[in-house]
Image (cartoon, rainbow over all chains, first blue to last red; front, side):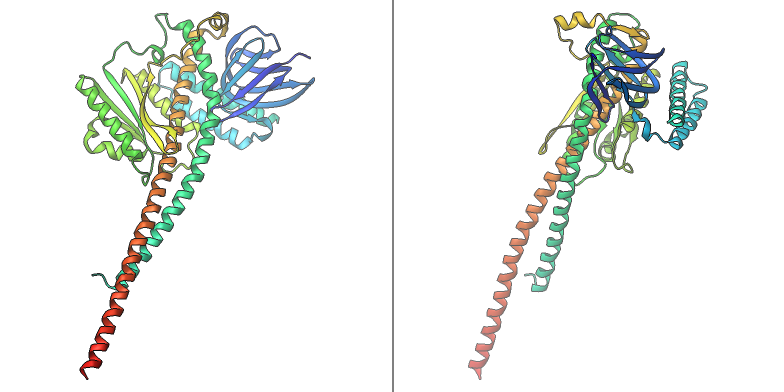
Length: 136
Length: 294
């Protein structure tokens, strides 16, 4: 089957860089499956799980805390704010994130709408992390 | 002339100083390697970010409601300088260089009639600049308790700058830090953060390909999310370079100190031996002249 180059980088390191058959990414407006030959796009990502398919099987699944993806027909580059393999997600850490994000949102109640929105996005990402941790 | 006992004491104390500086040099070398590896690991993200930003920026830059972070506030009056130094000393001229560079910049900007605000990262820079420029300080950040600087810290600083920009507290923001050139050479330099210098768009066929991107959500929303990230990554890079530079500088300084201590021990040992021989000669003369007198 045809493949395209997937690169997954976080600010701290390069996590993945190899040809894959398909990747499902949590785009801002819904999950998006990317196959080779996809039309060029730049999308924002929300907190969610990236699933990578190679050789007809799902080989990698990582949780990301939002980020961006650049897609061209021959490659996809994902810039993740933070990426953790699903297997090493901890429920306690996720729960703590949710509490922190909730507190931050409550604290931002009187701030500008953009700041509130950002806090809300962070809370959503933290909840997604909790869900992913529970499912894993 | 110092007595033999005094000299022995001094030799021993210099010897233990040498042991300490030698150990510090080893530690700095190990930490330098780690810091360099970390800086290396951060590079791919920064490169990809730059590529994305180049194509997005080109699409937005002309429009009137382009984000402030990209085009600035349109004025050039209030400058915010972020001065990055280390938390600790014993590193030669590392902190002083950055501090002196910052002070010269502040003086130059003020001579042009601009208002300058200073935010320091790292304890040493703060103490250096506070002596005479305390009135320009808007904040100081210290990571003395954090063992390893991560992206989180850079993100924190970026968030703070973004909030200040939203509040209209400055027009132009620059970063001053010691650029890591090699283990023995770090150069204090300035980098503009806001308005963001757009990475040069490689002309030609690449341009045509970039124009075809589809954006989700819109270009402006994407850019307004991407720019703060870019700010954070720039700061992260500077922090890492500064950390690597610090260990490099510390290593060199400790190497020099070890060598100086060695020289000093040689000198003191020579002195000690001379004094000892002089003492013996004197005692012999005393005994001989005593025997002759009898």
